[in-house]
Length: 455
Image (tube, rainbow, N blue to C red; front, side):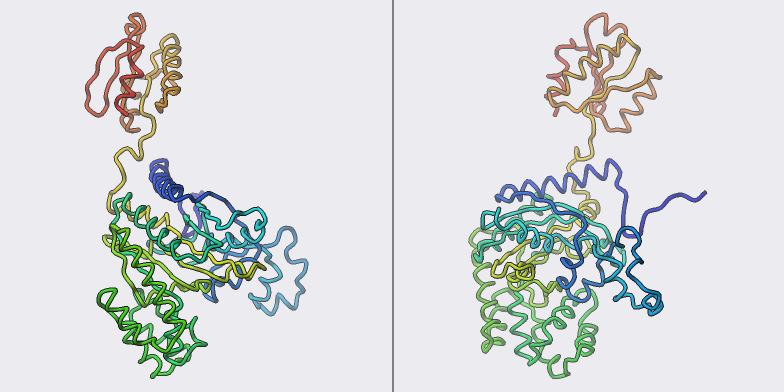
């Protein structure tokens, strides 16, 4: 009989791995809360009406669609099946899909609950999302996002605070990162500059792949999308632009001098970077004019974060979206948000071995089992230890001492409490420090305080 398996692009997590993942979630959560964000959750399943058309053509292809319950072929006739038109069939067979990200469900949430919300509304959300992508290192079909968004405010201070959150989170993790920033208005200005305003989406999708496929393949994709050689040539100086943020600003201002929307984007970025310089960041913030963030709903500032010491894709991204709630019937409500890729951060922390030493620790104290009478005393003391916030286990069976000590060692338990016949008669406990190897015979009433002092 073959072993069971799980779908490609998904993973099981051991207790040790879950301890590490919870360290990530708790760190990010604590920073979100530090900036006044409050938590919500939305369902894993959304209607396809909610999801389709929000992520661009490529994003729509990566949606996991869910077959209708019951007889899902009931509304399909034989002729339709024979046509093998998968796009047409999916609209009849599937009314729901797994969420692709947390931003679109959040926009739907805001519209549905708009009468209950105090604007500006600051929310965070830590939940899994699903994408029918090709699995590879750092890219999974099921993964967690940790999002923070502000809706109902046009202030660029929101962008600044989100950048500060990014800087704070990665500083706490000890991960050196490069924070990239751009503005979709600048990209719109570039599309105007080369005479292809109708090709904005094609341009952004192509240049967003520069790091992955290189300049030649980007240019080839632009040509396939209908851009002329002259238009592609006019993009090259901007795509390949290097230098300091100020030098880049000077070049792009001159390039977009006749584009109102492009200059608006430049001015927005100047204000954001000026405020960030005032407050200071531990990680570099770099203007990257090739950053496009392929998702169609972004309209203003866009962000992306790359780890400097590990070869892996983006580990955080986000941006401003002015029109997202409009497609759900609530126009004019601006929003801006970021999303941490918890699974990629998990891989980076593993690669760099940056987890705190006690991250995977389980119980701090283990009582060994030496028989019925000794066990009664151990259970009583274990209850007191737990009341005092000490993670405590009691070994369930009266087996050989070696087996119980091996268990404690393999579980990386700090202290072992031994209450045998002699210790019980004296009202004492033999406490062994498994890290140092030292052990001491102490009164039972001193046990809790001695262990607490070590935490």
